[in-house]
Length: 266
Image (cartoon, rainbow, N blue to C red; front, side):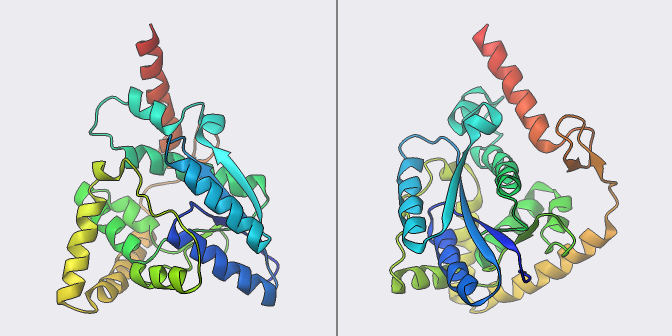
């Protein structure tokens, strides 16, 4: 995932996964030949993100890791809260909007600091949940995107914890005294992910190892879909990023949100 001389950008939210990842990467960087910086994305969720920003800032200072915050408001001229106020309807979930903007914000942050690699704290449970969400929504193209990127991608996106159970990361954080935000996102109940998490945890409790088996199947399926690659890649007419349509999902989303905002202001 990381090669000699890389500048690794750790995307740190303030949760247990990303801070544990930063802790591991910092220790590895001291014995392996790569550099490490951290970024945090501030979506603009009042009463929630402030605590995480303080935790991340203090932890990065303690580890001696350079750290920078990138805000939705500065990048997109909209906070998440403002986006939710002007969305067309609640069928467009907060998680869908936030996830689309967050991925672009991370790309921007990695480019800003000149990173070769973006490392995120996604764990095995996250992978299973995302696979089910994409399956239920009929979006099988996204299943293909779940397969690990080739070394030629710039910047490469890696998930070092992708084969580690969420509860193991919790154990690691507690045993190593890693502080993290335990308060859940106030919008998490909108999406289906929490229900899927509970379903998978019940399965695992009754059938030990089922998550691991499912994870292996997901990578095989995602590789097959990725290799089929029937949609030709194009360049977004608005921002210049790679996409499959005339404009990318980020620009399309922002256009709709800003049009709605403009109409509401009249």
